[in-house]
Length: 205
Image 1: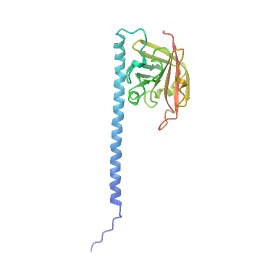
Image 2: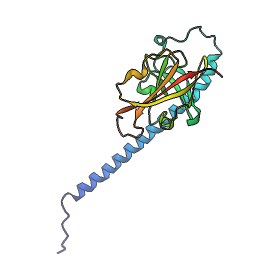
Image 3: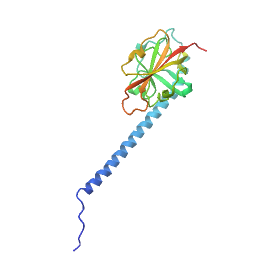
């Protein structure tokens, strides 16, 4: 008679569960990587197309007055922003919905149109387009290109505020730009604060 050692109960099912768990984790990882890759490719495509779009727009007759926000639609191309010292260059679109912020920076509804008179609010994600802002300094130059031309700004303040502090976006008599992103930059999950950069418009060179 041959005796066989008894197999501990549950070992087979446990190994099966582990194998399937590993497969599921691998599948999820592949899907997430594919999604991130698609978002990056999509963002780069839009960034590259904006420069040509603005050049073409400048060839068209311009209205005497600036654009009216009521005429703008979510995702509409408004311009491009560059901060030379940081190597930051990002397209600016109308609105701040998730789809818009995946492809660039968004103009905050209710604030001045980028490049126009007043306080223009521009937001972007801290882990994508606005990550370089962690190294911004006062007196840094900000350039905004629109269909009407170029505007230049100089950073005069950097601060951290609560999410409900909307005073930073209040209308101003001087022309300026206020950049908004979540803070801390490397916080996991929904960040508790907002990182605010304000710059005033400088005379054209």
